[in-house]
Length: 221
Image (cartoon, rainbow, N blue to C red; front, side):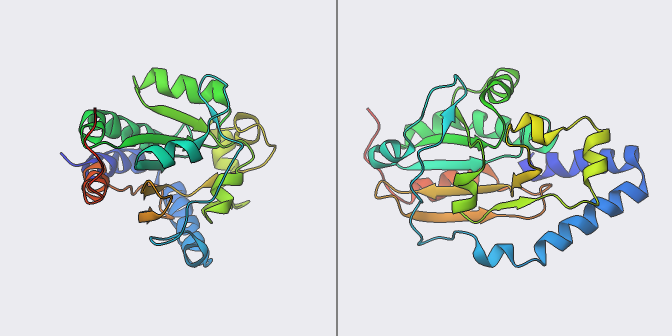
């Protein structure tokens, strides 16, 4: 079963539970985001990965992404938060492929706007063996052109569901990254980019692995 098949199955059940009105509200909000022009401003293959110094790992320690990228090719995947079931399915799919990613000399990091405590909870809940980074304040996502603010139309739904993003993210905003995955070579160039306004759709990790393999990194030790 592919990741998207799992996501679609969850979506079908979710729409049955919440009803047509909510499902249409969310779908309309997604299309509004798609029509906003945000994709045209987002990073793409051929761009340089922006330098960032504000990333913190799930253990609360500053993380030097620039040094990591200089050492080996990296898959960087952005997710909305541990409260998002689609994100958890995606993270588990990447975990299942982690040994294959490392076998070709690459590495994997996930990035969330949530505070490190929440990132740690997500890592533990999903038994993740890769680094989860907090982009508190969203500067990294903004530099990549994938950060946006939830519309007023959907905020009440998120609040009712218990997703207090201003508190979970620690920046007082309702901003999120669009789900996005970037493959970056050791020179810091983005060689593949997947960015999708519809959070119910994700890049299959197998596709990211193929993009990583095409870089032909040095054999892992």
